[in-house]
Length: 310
Image (cartoon, rainbow, N blue to C red; front, side, top):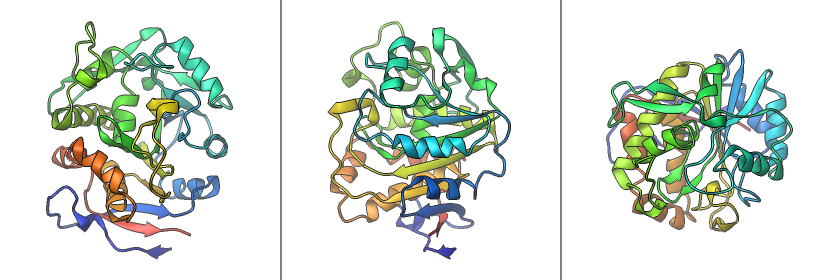
């Protein structure tokens, strides 16, 4: 292994950091072999029945993670299933029937896919020392798993600025209607059009509350894998309407530290010479608040060692 410089000091959150550094493993090569190789560096506490939280995406989404890569990865994780929840917005995955159709079309039918809030079943996870929420309604089946692998397509997001591991569990594990309404700060019985949902710092803090609930539940039995490929300003929830990426692929970053891995990916965006559109998307949505809010709640180390793996 060769060690790359610590680039957390690029300090996109505007806060000075001193002290220890988390380990973030990184490769520029995006394929199944390297994804598996990096996962094996961080999977010491992954055991038992394992959930793989994947954003399965709307039908025919052009930027979702490659099916063959995910299939090869899942085959190396015994007793695992892909897990998802339905959506709050009225898209392909709003209800379980439509969601199953989207899963089939997008090719996620090579293993069990657990729609955790099927039949709108939920379980409340407490939010300890959150910004705004006291509890979040998660998909009920989340409690059936011993460990969680957060496999994330790192990209932009219309509301969050960027969608990394934190966003993947914050929104993705929340139940499709009640939980996601809580995380978006809207009335579940009177959901406005998404452009009228709360934005900026308040939304970032709500996401952090939800992600914290899931992280506290799994403790050490959770790892984070960010794939920086086809980095569109759009989320995979936009399906075929997603914007074409305007920057090159970067690589794969993995860690046991949620804040460190999302911080590292954000720093790599800011280091890239072709990231103007992504930086604009992040800053106009106040997305860097995701990182500073996680730091304030002790959800990881904002300073990290980037360890490059061939």
